[in-house]
Image (cartoon, rainbow over all chains, first blue to last red; front, top):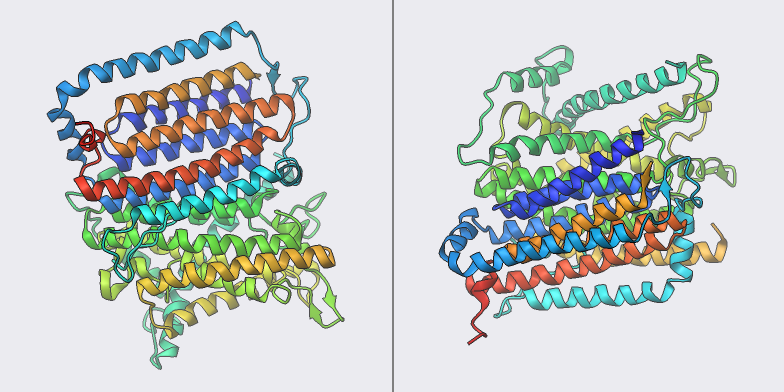
Length: 196
Length: 341
Length: 100
């Protein structure tokens, strides 16, 4: 096993185990933190894939902004960990069947995807320094050039999407009776609250 | 072990050691400057002119009992200060602080004076800084105390709000510097305009520099933006429940973050190690002088300005700083297109 | 030597974990987090495929996915805050009063 393979298994393992623990956690705060660990593993994989720019923005945007937003909301709502546990105890009959069905469906999804990948044979060859792959695109320069020429229109549309999301978040999270300083602003990982 | 590798390791250990020291020195400087500004003496008993005061502080903190609230989340409570201090140290790794050197001819070819030369250095600093938020937020949450929670909530909102302006101010400089590598940006600032004015980006980007410094103060949770630990309102904010070395780690992280923000500001706006009178091999002296000046500015601000009100802080960040930063970026982009980079 | 297939398999497993989370968990925040896991699994596919074909497109699509994820998280969390104000609960089964 070459070093890149070991790194792949370690980082992939971190991502998978952390993601599994995210959905296995009772405490939302722990879930959020484990998801950050999972993103860290993915970020390492992006570096292995010669995409340092994606690796860094993965940390800045996902781990640094979106997850802080999650953490902020979890802390703001201050959901006790007993809350969900009690719900699951109370609604146990409601959930048993649907939960089993969900688990089966997710298992089926894995089987289906693995089967599809296996039947397609080896795609695209192998990665690594010796593999006969096209040269990787690592430079931010090239990415920027493609982004602002071929993808200029989607890029502009994205800005409208962000604007709409920002306005939507402000409207949704506002209290019913508007107060002078009230209103929550949640755009791209941002919150504005009245003074605590 | 090639000589280059040994030099790199020595450099790494040296930077680590100096960052540790800088925290101690800043504690002393902060107390002395505060005393000067308030017309009192400050620490003067331990050692000559109180110079050994930081060591006394560290010793005292080491021998204090390490308390943990019973209802605290044990794992996260221990993890939070570690995240804070690790992020603070890690961010400095990509900051260059001197021209390439052979260490007085000891090496066959020159190496850059920085721990890691990354070509997306600016983004890396930004990423690590955004990780540092977690230390404070988790400390606030895991302590299970209302003051800590309020401090943690405030800091998450504050740091995210100011990170946007911080990033936009950075982007404007990068447009002019035409690179994401700090070394490249610094080298773009060598030389003079009209033989007098140094080609520092602060003269092209005065607005960007002001935004960067304001957002930097908010990012490091220093007065007048020290809401996460506002003593008069929140006891000590996110580190209310911390004692002993865990408290010391938060304290250290705060000062190291100050040093890092100042060093990045010097690299981006103040010409890094370029300056008159000294040969390029001694450029790190200029770097130290400039960082020292910015650090003094930080301390000066803290003991001069009163704290903002929390909603004023948010309104200022979103309604004033962010639009100005965006306009500054637009103007810079227009300038770069018109005059060329 | 890591093959593209290995990356695609890893991505498939991650996607299934995310789907499992959405199916099984009864906590709105965890469900949103599971959606993030699925988005990230897809991102991994894009970057791996982009690397295999030697183009920048994979990385650019990831950029767009992240933007959409940010918008989704902001609106989703705002909805959660609004819902929580009504029912003091994060259980999706607490918001079924429109069923009857």
